[in-house]
Length: 629
Ligand code: MG
Ligand code: MG
Picture 1 (tube, rainbow, N blue to C red):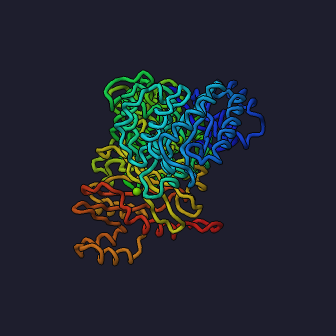
Picture 2 (spheres, rainbow, N blue to C red; picture 1 turned 90 degrees about the vertical axis):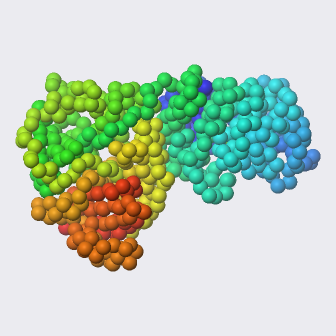
Picture 3 (tube, rainbow, N blue to C red; picture 1 turned 135 degrees about the vertical axis):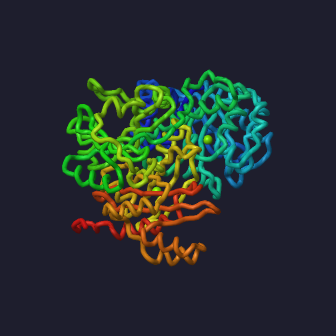
């Protein structure tokens, strides 16, 4: 299938959009009339620009309010169309998208629509172009692809075909079975868009919230499977109207778009159980076994204080890198890498972002296959010079320019700690403060990046996503969405807000960009861990007394337990019979913090406690301009 994208999907001027579309590897583009109108040049200039970029202009759109017009307005509509045909000749484009009429005074009747389309089709034929008819979900009389198809079928003209649009079809939950019997050569174009499940009018939903396949909740694979039955292998074009996209970078959005189509075709193959000639051949989504390590970029000045914190949390320094100023701190199955090397990636990252997580190492079933899939999905592989004695660990660019490494137990990568590190101390008999694994990683990002990273994780790894949630920060609303593997081996919380006053946003300005804001470690006994922290002098985030009064009123809790929660500043949530315990360290260097959680069959993230925690953190935060506490 030929992959294309409509200019309306992206931000910027037309030239910038076309460059971004070509750079992302698309071969086709739909030109939106508004982009042409605001372009400072002639349609021939656009044609040349597209040709130079190796892009085919596949469609010009939209042509609105055409079919079923009362007699006195009908002639003008044809004259209007002729002017579009002139424009298309200059553009070098042979397909005009005609969307169904929304005018209140237009007349119904399939035969009337068919007659109009036939006449327009004949005019198009004379001009050497074609027209494609699309049912808008809010069309006055035609708002269902089955009616649009009936009008096209009755028009019975070689230059008149059907345009199918996943949004218009799936938003109204239109039955898909009729699609299977449409002859494939009568379908001129298929437009693809996803959207989050929302309860609102279809027009606003479509104009503001469409997103790329896989970013929303529409049953796109049902649609594609029905389309597959027709044998259609023509144009597949993204048509997204989205406010976040309009605020994002055209280049990165175009890549997201192409990635989403590759991923959708990949899923379609598994769905229909046979290869699709147009799909990119990819290894399956990578099964994630857990977080192997978290790497901090840190400068020598901050190192002692951070090492003290890690020591207080029960970590011990287990190894020193064979050739770099890099050390490994460990506890349970958690590895923290402190990279204070004055050369290379981590150093550059530290100069830009300060003390921060510069890389996450994921333990996967097959690291090589994971990288191969990432490359097929247009993710950005990262390579740096490998010194003698070092492993070439496969990696791709992740959030905010950080890295995601892939380690697997089967290859030498699984022995990275033995190969690249010299042991500095035998592991202590007691397991530190009882921390066992990385429970979840919380990342803060700009609002318009959220869908990018949702697609990045879900297309590459075998993870699902939760519904988007609103969290109340004292500075505004934070959107939160989780990607996680079914067994919980990997959980990543994505947070974004549009207000500049939320903790999530403050992190972005303090750290000069998106990144890991907190890491949650698991313990099997939160109170034992809390006691160990107390003994080592780790300061926890103080939780106000009111919280515990409220908890007592809300949940029937054992008095001794309540007292213990309060004594250790532990937050609590219960869902049915499952229980969740959380506590937080104070924020390090005004940037990030650690969370400790104990799950008793609990699968959430303590959303009920988020506001209390965020408010407590806001209280602790340094007011702008004041010295640090
Ligand atoms: Mg459309
Ligand atoms: Mg958390």
